[in-house]
Image 1 (cartoon, one colour):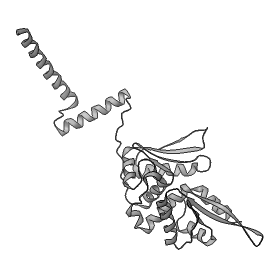
Image 2 (cartoon, helix red, strand yellow):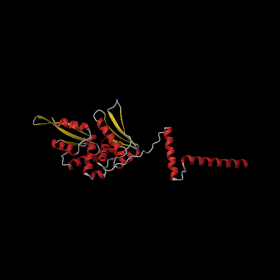
Image 3 (cartoon, helix red, strand yellow):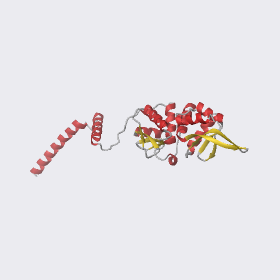
Image 4 (tube, rainbow, N blue to C red):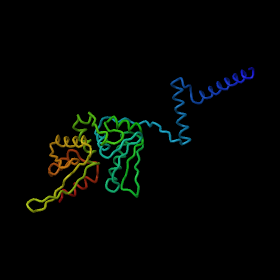
Length: 261
């Protein structure tokens, strides 16, 4: 019994010494300062050991601006949001310049590093934003974490209720999911060519938003298939590029070339 009592006493002393040593290293877990110190030391340990632990990176929260509205449109068009990464994927051969624009836009908006990933064996280039905070922010803008088609899109009110923000969002949508093409048609046996633009998306809410935005601009969109909207009148297309514009050099190059035909 005496030996057991001595053992318990030594164990208690050892526990106290260990506790004091841990408080000195990580801080008192019962105080705000102690928890903050413990968190910082824990992050240093994860970095040193390369454990793969996900750390919440602080971001700059963007204001409601035309630039942010355009970015929302870009993510709705070609983006994917999961828990820790927001990725915008596009064609590496035709849209690499626009991918660089998106990277710079995201870096300016959020104030964190943004990468471009591309593979020589693939035609896909991806703009990758590794930040849970950005993912959560995109979710609050109505973009779900997961399948946009299955979970649905909800455009934020601050964009819907502003004509300028709506135009910026439309620009982001079209620059990712739109195309400028040479429209060929026959009238009374004669073949005619003119510039046309088309926007394709599988999500009904996105198509309705795009269609209504064009109508509000005084344009005349047509929809001959469930997932595609067209502008075919020359004056409508010229008005679109004048009123909405584009940040994708590919679209402007094609529009400039086709309008000469």
